Image (cartoon, rainbow over all chains, first blue to last red; front, side, top):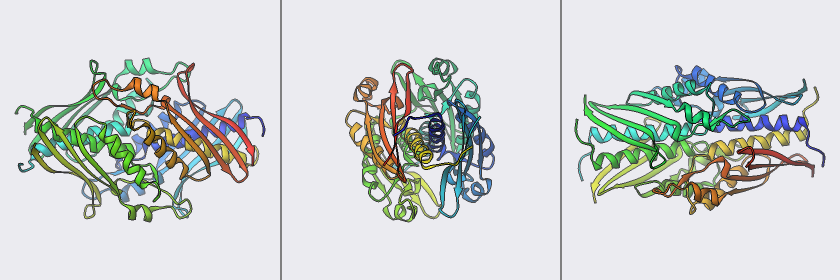
Length: 118
Length: 118
Length: 118
Length: 118
């Protein structure tokens, strides 16, 4: 057992943000017209939280198009439609993490891309 | 027992939209800076759904201000912060409904305001 | 325009409950082992709300099985997996409503089944 | 910049689970009668997810009691009512994390308690 350090905290905070965002917004009614607005508000709601250095949210337009109900012309936001890149800054440690759809596992995968000192 | 009519359907659809919106968005991280963007995206996500004639969403800025965490400068969207006016059009029937904070009951109250033929 | 009556209120409350339940629970991690517990807690959380006379929630086991991630052995609750039958009692009016997956429209459809006086 | 290791991954996964749980279940209608059932289903839904070694969820009965709407006798689950202890096992690393209400900051605080090798 070792002391908890800044690197641990940066990575932990990054995980919290991705998990929270996912379960807050998945299920939101969405169409091609509202994709961009939803991307921005998801980004904004993440950016408000402690230790967020930067965040970018991209919703896959093709998946949205394919999922649109033919009659009602909208669908629900799904985890696999989301591509999120997030940087957490905790003291002088930066954790770069990502949510991206993994086609092989058919799973919206969250992963650490890089950890660096500022 | 009587036939289900268009008036019933208009009112039912109105209830669905309010209930759905509430449980989709309550919990979203919010601050004074993101209130307006969140109002618009909630409106947009409601407007996408079947039979919505018009919708307006207002988030109480004063309540948001009061609930801001002093250290982290954001809070979570609560039901009592929401004021939603919604019109559902089903065939030729219009249901006007509302979500508004009821201070006396301390409860985010959903109610039918008016039902009319077009 | 006509007076809002008890029938309107019963149907409106029924819509609220279905919409709320849907957006509260869709997205919950689920497997064959937890289906039954989740059905009960969804029922319980609906039954707490005003004017609920009875509620029954059924989650489609076959759909859950098919959606299980092969590696991680769980999936997320989707709207199309849900079958909900709900009775709202408002004064002496009973509204029977349902959420059921409509295969033809590929849509989790909410509908009024019957409205009766007690 | 250094290689991402098992310790990082354990801590990251722990953050994901806490953030996800929080935003999935906050807002659920709850009363003293349903507290226990909801605790179990939250535990079960976390335990399904990858790398979870153990989890325990406790909902503060006193806070629920105090928040019960006097007329309707239920309230909504809030983040501050939740006490969650979670262990993530990634390869041979164990991360112990917690969600607990911090009275001083009036904030549902997520923190790393311990990281150890198995």
